[in-house]
Length: 358
Image (tube, rainbow, N blue to C red):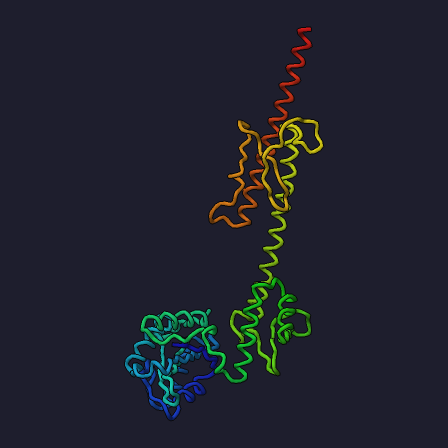
């Protein structure tokens, strides 16, 4: 089941279209069929209840697969339409339901008044999104044929321009996971003979659309696939850039924390053998990637940092892991700095007492 929201500006044109020769009325509410002019006048009369609403015409076509044709009786189609209207919030208003008989696939048209019986407005907010969701729900509920996704379409049976459109779809889908920007996407598509062109807003340099071309055919991104519209692709690349910048900031914070930790470690436990005069053995260390390695405190140390604590936990994202160990190193560095100060204080106190004995 597929629903298509159709733009309409007048009841006369819309009702006149749906009442074609090869059609029959399944149901009408609040209007008097079968004459077109009478139904149009009924619709118009009700719009006077809400003169501020400009777009008063609702027009949606509902189509079913030819595979469902044997099941699609007038009674079942009417039942599905009523349930569709209920879920879409098209209630307590005039409507006309007309089945067309000129195509192999069963389909009908719903014409409704967006001015309700009490003068209320029948909302069309997010109507396309709601329409797709409701059609999917009803398709599953009634066990209707579900059209395969693009990945299931048999390419060898396609003709132009669909053949080229699916070639572009396959190319974009294949290289998109490897692309972090529009430039990278353009480059990879160019290698496959696909051109990329942008639409701009007026005379500005602000991009608002994208077109892909191959074999002399050109398609807008949304015609290739809804997920390939300019807005969705641009949002994807912006999100990747934000993630990259955020990750770089986190790694920078981690490197600074690791440096502070190493300095505090040397101040508390002495040099670790890198050019120092200490005879202590090199302590065990953990490699933090770009942040370098850090030594672990010896056993019995009051500073709680272990290799296990620095490992990534199950279900923890890389960003969460970096932020957690950064906080852990900062806390450990602060604790070691305090411990070093306390040790120096005790040593000075011991020296002072020793002098007093002398």
